[in-house]
Image 1 (cartoon, rainbow, N blue to C red):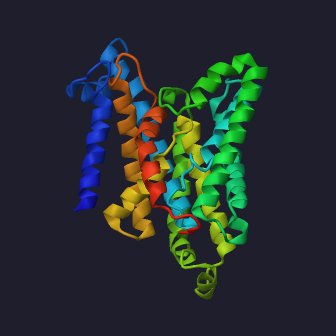
Image 2: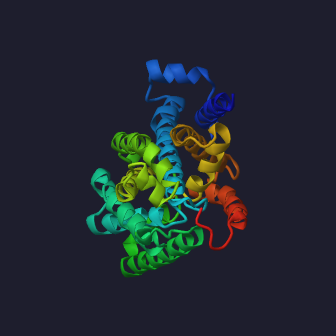
Length: 327
């Protein structure tokens, strides 16, 4: 029954995203725009050229971050694990900013590819600094490693902006995630990458659950921890890279979604992943829609809205984590 409610909420949020904004659109506009598109009709242009691409970007980025957060929390057994908090978003965003500054913005698809090595290096660095290579990746250690990496990357970003003033406009987008530039992003390609990450996550889910039993016991069950961790790292790289390439760094979404997914379906990782993708998309689209109407005609970026919602959630979860705990 809870899954049904999640589906209902998702449908309502999607409908609200298409109808609510600075310019309200009546339902009859949808069919007219799809089957009798008139480029001279402002309502048709608003729907097909702005809101639908923005909705698709929210679906891709939200689902991808929901998957990434769920896999990170399952592998590290860390309720504070999140692509934003642990610096993975920052790594992808830094690589994109550096590539855009050096290569220009002529080909968004080529520049977007840089998000993946950035996300991979950041996630590997946090995992290593947090003690993952020694099997001692505790919640506090990983969070501190992620905070340190975030600070380092922010310093590098500031250095780039100071050296090249023309990168300031690019920096304004990448400092906080947004769906406003959805029409310039390689949405089909990133949707495919995120889907590949989701499929891989579903395939390795049983092994990740076995790994949660501990390295010794998981080896006894035939699981190779190194391979499972490498697979999880690949999932996080694909999903986070796709999300950042589409929407920039969206904070706290990967933190909020996994506990909600577990509340809906319990401790079954494959079911958690499916629900997390749906919830992640719904939360990001909701944050984007809310940001469009709170200070209309001005707009609050989706990344800021998720931070406003997720900040208190992070503090609440952090209070539940005991120092020295590893799960």
